[in-house]
Length: 361
Image 1 (cartoon, rainbow, N blue to C red):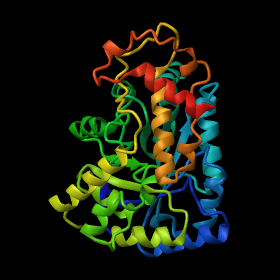
Image 2 (image 1 turned 30 degrees about the vertical axis):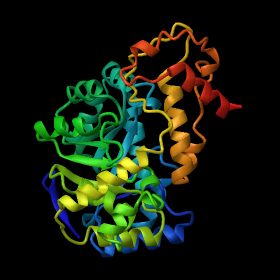
Image 3 (image 1 turned 180 degrees about the vertical axis):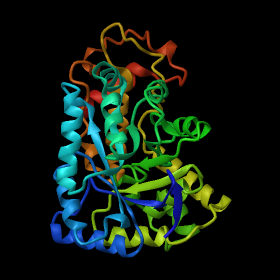
């Protein structure tokens, strides 16, 4: 197992994400037992993950508390008063059967939750728990733009930050730019969604042919992790392992350091381009076409259109079921053409909007 120094502790670079446990307790227990036996010592759960805290505590019964590190998260959207901060924290401790949490995060920050944190005095409440030794290290997770990341960083001198990153989502908020901001501030990074919710573990042939040609024995998921392991400030990469096979595959990937060669980088880039070619419209989401005078959310319609196409190719149910914006669909378009001259990609927006309508019928 590869380890990193993370907040002064020796932590496995592979973290066990606990949002997607197997369907039965017995399967989950087998997965965690194997992970523990092979040196995985970082377990990432959250207050709002369905029964995950309780299941995790049961699976870890019998293990020395010093042999693993627990992570949980405070759901800001559930807070009504500052007293709820302490209440929810202790509920997590009760579920986890512990009197302290090693790594505690403000969960999934966005502009609204950052504002709420300030208004309720959330940080002051968490400081009390830190002073009492109940929280060992404080961080936050985020899926929001760079501007929100910077605002969140001003809340407190955080020990670490968790962001989404994978080879397909390098510009996804806050993306690689977020990684660079955190690195410049010497804040260690934890990665979530390295396999994009499992989507990148199932890239079909011939889209994944470059992987097969480079090394046919590596899984699709393995390439996702190896891509991220090249960045030194990515200290922990979380994987929501849902089967014993996934645990074994990940343990093999993280068993030793391997150089991320130019040839491997080229293979990852080609697979990324192959996946992106499944898009139906080359929209970058720049929003130069907005606002539409008739209320069409053009970028959102195109995002759904592209993700449906990608979902079909990658057999991703979440993408295939993604819904168009109910009150801002292409049905509002009157073909005025005002958006066409604004689009830097030269997309004939009204015509493509008509195509999305065909899919919605």
